[in-house]
Length: 266
Ligand SMILES: Cc1cc2nc3c(=O)[nH]c(=O)nc-3n(C[C@H](O)[C@H](O)[C@H](O)COP(=O)(O)OP(=O)(O)OC[C@H]3O[C@@H](n4cnc5c(N)ncnc54)[C@H](O)[C@@H]3O)c2cc1C
Image (tube, rainbow, N blue to C red):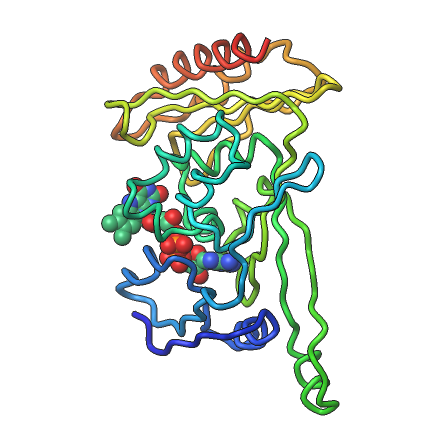
Protein backbone atom coordinates (compact mmCIF):
# COMPACT_ATOMS: atom_id res chain seq x y z
CA UNK A 1 0.00 0.00 0.00
CA UNK A 2 1.29 3.47 -0.87
CA UNK A 3 0.93 5.63 2.27
CA UNK A 4 2.42 8.89 0.93
CA UNK A 5 3.27 10.30 -2.49
CA UNK A 6 6.15 12.62 -3.35
CA UNK A 7 6.85 14.16 -6.74
CA UNK A 8 10.37 15.68 -6.68
CA UNK A 9 11.25 18.15 -9.43
CA UNK A 10 15.00 17.48 -9.48
CA UNK A 11 17.31 14.52 -9.13
CA UNK A 12 18.80 15.99 -5.92
CA UNK A 13 15.33 16.27 -4.40
CA UNK A 14 14.55 12.68 -5.36
CA UNK A 15 17.80 11.39 -3.82
CA UNK A 16 17.22 13.36 -0.61
CA UNK A 17 13.70 11.90 -0.34
CA UNK A 18 14.98 8.38 -0.99
CA UNK A 19 17.67 8.68 1.69
CA UNK A 20 14.86 8.39 4.29
CA UNK A 21 13.67 4.91 5.30
CA UNK A 22 10.64 3.27 3.76
CA UNK A 23 10.60 5.36 0.61
CA UNK A 24 10.80 3.76 -2.79
CA UNK A 25 11.11 5.05 -6.35
CA UNK A 26 7.97 4.94 -8.47
CA UNK A 27 8.69 4.42 -12.16
CA UNK A 28 5.64 3.47 -14.20
CA UNK A 29 3.89 2.28 -11.05
CA UNK A 30 2.47 -0.79 -12.79
CA UNK A 31 3.79 -3.06 -10.06
CA UNK A 32 4.15 -0.63 -7.17
CA UNK A 33 0.50 0.46 -7.37
CA UNK A 34 -0.50 -3.19 -6.82
CA UNK A 35 1.50 -3.72 -3.60
CA UNK A 36 -0.88 -5.25 -1.07
CA UNK A 37 1.14 -5.88 2.04
CA UNK A 38 4.12 -3.49 2.26
CA UNK A 39 3.48 0.12 3.29
CA UNK A 40 5.75 2.46 1.34
CA UNK A 41 6.05 6.14 0.49
CA UNK A 42 6.36 6.50 -3.27
CA UNK A 43 8.85 8.92 -4.82
CA UNK A 44 7.48 9.48 -8.31
CA UNK A 45 10.26 9.95 -10.87
CA UNK A 46 8.17 11.37 -13.71
CA UNK A 47 9.23 15.02 -13.29
CA UNK A 48 13.00 14.55 -13.14
CA UNK A 49 13.79 14.05 -16.82
CA UNK A 50 15.33 10.60 -16.74
CA UNK A 51 13.39 9.61 -19.86
CA UNK A 52 15.89 10.18 -22.65
CA UNK A 53 17.60 7.72 -25.00
CA UNK A 54 20.98 8.76 -26.40
CA UNK A 55 23.45 6.96 -28.60
CA UNK A 56 26.96 7.94 -27.57
CA UNK A 57 29.55 6.29 -29.79
CA UNK A 58 28.96 2.56 -29.47
CA UNK A 59 26.87 2.88 -26.30
CA UNK A 60 23.15 3.29 -25.89
CA UNK A 61 22.33 5.36 -22.79
CA UNK A 62 18.78 4.62 -21.66
CA UNK A 63 17.28 6.85 -18.97
CA UNK A 64 15.75 4.98 -16.05
CA UNK A 65 12.21 6.21 -16.71
CA UNK A 66 12.18 5.50 -20.44
CA UNK A 67 9.11 3.33 -20.97
CA UNK A 68 9.34 -0.04 -22.68
CA UNK A 69 7.25 1.30 -25.58
CA UNK A 70 9.39 4.45 -25.89
CA UNK A 71 12.47 2.22 -26.20
CA UNK A 72 10.73 -0.04 -28.71
CA UNK A 73 9.77 2.95 -30.88
CA UNK A 74 13.11 4.74 -30.57
CA UNK A 75 15.18 5.18 -33.74
CA UNK A 76 18.11 3.87 -31.68
CA UNK A 77 16.43 0.59 -30.68
CA UNK A 78 18.25 -2.27 -32.48
CA UNK A 79 15.95 -4.50 -34.56
CA UNK A 80 17.29 -7.54 -32.68
CA UNK A 81 15.81 -6.21 -29.39
CA UNK A 82 12.29 -5.67 -30.66
CA UNK A 83 10.78 -9.12 -30.24
CA UNK A 84 12.18 -9.30 -26.69
CA UNK A 85 10.66 -5.91 -25.82
CA UNK A 86 7.26 -6.95 -27.17
CA UNK A 87 7.38 -10.20 -25.18
CA UNK A 88 8.19 -8.35 -21.93
CA UNK A 89 4.67 -7.02 -21.48
CA UNK A 90 1.52 -6.15 -23.47
CA UNK A 91 1.14 -2.67 -25.02
CA UNK A 92 -0.81 -1.03 -22.17
CA UNK A 93 1.85 -2.08 -19.68
CA UNK A 94 4.68 -1.15 -22.06
CA UNK A 95 3.25 2.36 -22.26
CA UNK A 96 3.71 2.84 -18.49
CA UNK A 97 6.38 0.42 -17.31
CA UNK A 98 9.89 1.87 -17.22
CA UNK A 99 13.14 0.14 -18.09
CA UNK A 100 14.58 0.52 -14.57
CA UNK A 101 11.34 -0.57 -12.86
CA UNK A 102 11.23 -3.64 -15.08
CA UNK A 103 14.82 -4.62 -14.20
CA UNK A 104 14.17 -4.18 -10.47
CA UNK A 105 10.93 -6.18 -10.55
CA UNK A 106 11.80 -8.82 -13.16
CA UNK A 107 11.98 -12.58 -12.78
CA UNK A 108 13.73 -15.18 -14.92
CA UNK A 109 11.09 -14.94 -17.63
CA UNK A 110 11.94 -11.31 -18.35
CA UNK A 111 13.07 -11.03 -21.96
CA UNK A 112 14.33 -7.46 -21.45
CA UNK A 113 16.55 -8.49 -18.52
CA UNK A 114 17.79 -11.48 -20.57
CA UNK A 115 18.93 -9.37 -23.53
CA UNK A 116 20.44 -6.57 -21.44
CA UNK A 117 22.32 -9.10 -19.26
CA UNK A 118 23.78 -10.77 -22.39
CA UNK A 119 24.83 -7.39 -23.74
CA UNK A 120 26.63 -6.68 -20.43
CA UNK A 121 24.53 -3.60 -19.65
CA UNK A 122 25.66 -1.39 -16.77
CA UNK A 123 23.38 0.46 -14.38
CA UNK A 124 24.24 3.88 -13.03
CA UNK A 125 22.98 4.01 -9.44
CA UNK A 126 22.93 7.23 -7.42
CA UNK A 127 22.35 7.92 -3.74
CA UNK A 128 23.04 10.39 -0.94
CA UNK A 129 24.23 9.01 2.36
CA UNK A 130 22.81 10.11 5.73
CA UNK A 131 25.99 11.87 6.89
CA UNK A 132 26.19 13.88 3.69
CA UNK A 133 22.56 14.83 4.22
CA UNK A 134 23.29 16.25 7.69
CA UNK A 135 26.32 18.18 6.46
CA UNK A 136 24.43 19.51 3.47
CA UNK A 137 21.65 20.80 5.75
CA UNK A 138 24.16 22.45 8.13
CA UNK A 139 26.10 24.06 5.29
CA UNK A 140 23.01 24.94 3.18
CA UNK A 141 24.48 23.58 -0.03
CA UNK A 142 23.35 21.02 -2.63
CA UNK A 143 24.12 17.39 -1.71
CA UNK A 144 27.06 15.45 -3.13
CA UNK A 145 25.73 12.44 -4.99
CA UNK A 146 27.34 9.02 -4.67
CA UNK A 147 27.52 7.32 -8.05
CA UNK A 148 28.10 3.61 -8.65
CA UNK A 149 28.23 1.69 -11.91
CA UNK A 150 27.03 -1.88 -11.54
CA UNK A 151 26.79 -4.63 -14.17
CA UNK A 152 23.27 -5.96 -14.55
CA UNK A 153 24.59 -9.46 -13.79
CA UNK A 154 25.85 -8.30 -10.37
CA UNK A 155 22.75 -6.23 -9.72
CA UNK A 156 20.08 -8.88 -10.30
CA UNK A 157 20.88 -11.33 -7.47
CA UNK A 158 21.26 -8.54 -4.89
CA UNK A 159 18.80 -6.08 -6.29
CA UNK A 160 16.75 -5.45 -3.14
CA UNK A 161 19.87 -4.48 -1.18
CA UNK A 162 21.46 -2.67 -4.09
CA UNK A 163 18.42 -0.48 -4.72
CA UNK A 164 17.38 0.33 -1.13
CA UNK A 165 17.56 4.12 -0.66
CA UNK A 166 19.12 4.43 -4.10
CA UNK A 167 18.04 5.34 -7.57
CA UNK A 168 18.91 3.78 -10.90
CA UNK A 169 19.35 6.79 -13.16
CA UNK A 170 20.40 5.17 -16.44
CA UNK A 171 21.30 1.94 -18.18
CA UNK A 172 24.27 1.88 -20.54
CA UNK A 173 24.38 -0.82 -23.21
CA UNK A 174 27.38 -1.48 -25.48
CA UNK A 175 26.28 -1.92 -29.08
CA UNK A 176 29.63 -2.71 -30.68
CA UNK A 177 29.23 -6.48 -31.01
CA UNK A 178 26.86 -8.86 -32.78
CA UNK A 179 23.65 -9.91 -31.06
CA UNK A 180 20.89 -12.50 -31.43
CA UNK A 181 17.77 -13.42 -29.45
CA UNK A 182 15.45 -16.40 -29.83
CA UNK A 183 12.74 -18.02 -27.72
CA UNK A 184 10.20 -20.78 -27.33
CA UNK A 185 6.83 -20.18 -25.67
CA UNK A 186 3.35 -21.70 -25.61
CA UNK A 187 2.10 -19.11 -28.12
CA UNK A 188 4.14 -16.55 -30.10
CA UNK A 189 3.11 -13.66 -27.80
CA UNK A 190 3.41 -15.52 -24.50
CA UNK A 191 6.26 -15.20 -22.00
CA UNK A 192 9.03 -17.63 -22.98
CA UNK A 193 9.51 -21.06 -21.46
CA UNK A 194 13.11 -20.72 -22.64
CA UNK A 195 14.79 -17.74 -24.29
CA UNK A 196 18.40 -17.22 -25.28
CA UNK A 197 20.35 -14.01 -25.88
CA UNK A 198 23.79 -14.18 -27.42
CA UNK A 199 26.28 -11.33 -27.66
CA UNK A 200 29.64 -11.62 -29.39
CA UNK A 201 32.31 -8.96 -29.63
CA UNK A 202 35.15 -8.55 -32.17
CA UNK A 203 37.63 -9.99 -29.65
CA UNK A 204 35.69 -13.27 -29.80
CA UNK A 205 34.22 -12.77 -26.32
CA UNK A 206 30.86 -14.55 -26.31
CA UNK A 207 28.12 -14.24 -23.71
CA UNK A 208 25.04 -16.43 -23.59
CA UNK A 209 22.22 -15.63 -21.19
CA UNK A 210 19.18 -17.87 -20.78
CA UNK A 211 15.77 -16.75 -19.57
CA UNK A 212 12.47 -18.47 -18.94
CA UNK A 213 12.97 -19.85 -15.45
CA UNK A 214 13.67 -18.86 -11.87
CA UNK A 215 14.20 -15.53 -10.14
CA UNK A 216 16.40 -13.97 -12.80
CA UNK A 217 17.98 -14.81 -16.15
CA UNK A 218 21.05 -17.02 -16.01
CA UNK A 219 24.54 -16.46 -17.43
CA UNK A 220 25.24 -19.76 -19.22
CA UNK A 221 28.54 -18.74 -20.77
CA UNK A 222 30.99 -15.83 -20.88
CA UNK A 223 34.03 -17.03 -22.79
CA UNK A 224 36.74 -15.90 -25.13
CA UNK A 225 35.09 -17.81 -28.00
CA UNK A 226 31.87 -19.66 -28.84
CA UNK A 227 33.30 -23.18 -28.49
CA UNK A 228 31.09 -25.36 -26.27
CA UNK A 229 28.12 -23.01 -26.27
CA UNK A 230 25.50 -25.72 -26.82
CA UNK A 231 26.86 -27.78 -23.92
CA UNK A 232 26.93 -24.70 -21.71
CA UNK A 233 23.30 -23.94 -22.59
CA UNK A 234 22.28 -27.54 -22.00
CA UNK A 235 24.00 -27.73 -18.59
CA UNK A 236 22.78 -24.37 -17.32
CA UNK A 237 19.18 -25.53 -17.05
CA UNK A 238 19.81 -28.88 -15.34
CA UNK A 239 17.57 -27.95 -12.38
CA UNK A 240 15.10 -25.77 -14.28
CA UNK A 241 11.88 -27.64 -13.64
CA UNK A 242 8.69 -25.74 -12.82
CA UNK A 243 5.00 -25.78 -13.66
CA UNK A 244 5.73 -24.72 -17.28
CA UNK A 245 8.34 -27.32 -18.29
CA UNK A 246 10.75 -29.98 -17.10
CA UNK A 247 14.49 -29.40 -16.80
CA UNK A 248 15.09 -32.03 -19.54
CA UNK A 249 12.88 -30.10 -21.95
CA UNK A 250 14.53 -26.76 -21.10
CA UNK A 251 18.03 -28.24 -21.45
CA UNK A 252 17.28 -29.46 -24.99
CA UNK A 253 15.55 -26.26 -26.04
CA UNK A 254 18.32 -24.06 -24.57
CA UNK A 255 20.97 -25.94 -26.57
CA UNK A 256 18.93 -25.60 -29.77
CA UNK A 257 18.31 -21.88 -29.22
CA UNK A 258 22.00 -21.27 -28.47
CA UNK A 259 22.93 -23.00 -31.73
CA UNK A 260 20.35 -20.98 -33.69
CA UNK A 261 21.56 -17.70 -32.16
CA UNK A 262 25.16 -18.53 -33.02
CA UNK A 263 24.24 -19.43 -36.61
CA UNK A 264 22.29 -16.21 -37.01
CA UNK A 265 25.26 -13.96 -36.13
CA UNK A 266 27.75 -15.76 -38.44
C1 LIG B 1 -1.94 -5.83 -15.46
C2 LIG B 1 -0.45 -6.07 -15.25
C3 LIG B 1 0.20 -6.97 -16.09
C4 LIG B 1 1.58 -7.20 -15.91
N1 LIG B 1 2.15 -8.06 -16.75
C5 LIG B 1 3.46 -8.32 -16.59
C6 LIG B 1 4.11 -9.21 -17.47
O1 LIG B 1 3.52 -9.75 -18.40
N2 LIG B 1 5.41 -9.45 -17.26
C7 LIG B 1 6.10 -8.85 -16.24
O2 LIG B 1 7.31 -9.09 -16.07
N3 LIG B 1 5.53 -7.99 -15.43
C8 LIG B 1 4.24 -7.71 -15.57
N4 LIG B 1 3.66 -6.85 -14.71
C9 LIG B 1 4.48 -6.25 -13.65
C10 LIG B 1 5.07 -4.88 -14.02
O3 LIG B 1 4.33 -4.33 -15.10
C11 LIG B 1 6.52 -4.92 -14.44
O4 LIG B 1 7.33 -5.46 -13.45
C12 LIG B 1 6.96 -3.49 -14.81
O5 LIG B 1 7.85 -3.61 -15.86
C13 LIG B 1 7.49 -2.64 -13.67
O6 LIG B 1 7.92 -1.38 -14.20
P1 LIG B 1 7.40 0.01 -13.55
O7 LIG B 1 8.19 1.11 -14.19
O8 LIG B 1 5.92 0.10 -13.67
O9 LIG B 1 7.87 -0.19 -12.07
P2 LIG B 1 7.22 0.31 -10.71
O10 LIG B 1 5.93 -0.42 -10.45
O11 LIG B 1 7.18 1.79 -10.70
O12 LIG B 1 8.33 -0.20 -9.72
C14 LIG B 1 8.70 -1.57 -9.65
C15 LIG B 1 9.88 -1.69 -8.66
O13 LIG B 1 11.03 -1.03 -9.23
C16 LIG B 1 11.51 -0.02 -8.35
N5 LIG B 1 12.01 1.08 -9.20
C17 LIG B 1 11.33 1.69 -10.21
N6 LIG B 1 12.14 2.59 -10.82
C18 LIG B 1 13.33 2.55 -10.17
C19 LIG B 1 14.57 3.26 -10.29
N7 LIG B 1 14.75 4.19 -11.26
N8 LIG B 1 15.58 2.96 -9.45
C20 LIG B 1 15.43 2.02 -8.49
N9 LIG B 1 14.28 1.32 -8.31
C21 LIG B 1 13.26 1.58 -9.14
C22 LIG B 1 10.31 0.37 -7.52
O14 LIG B 1 10.70 0.99 -6.31
C23 LIG B 1 9.63 -0.98 -7.33
O15 LIG B 1 10.29 -1.70 -6.32
C24 LIG B 1 2.31 -6.55 -14.87
C25 LIG B 1 1.63 -5.64 -14.07
C26 LIG B 1 0.30 -5.39 -14.25
C27 LIG B 1 -0.40 -4.37 -13.38
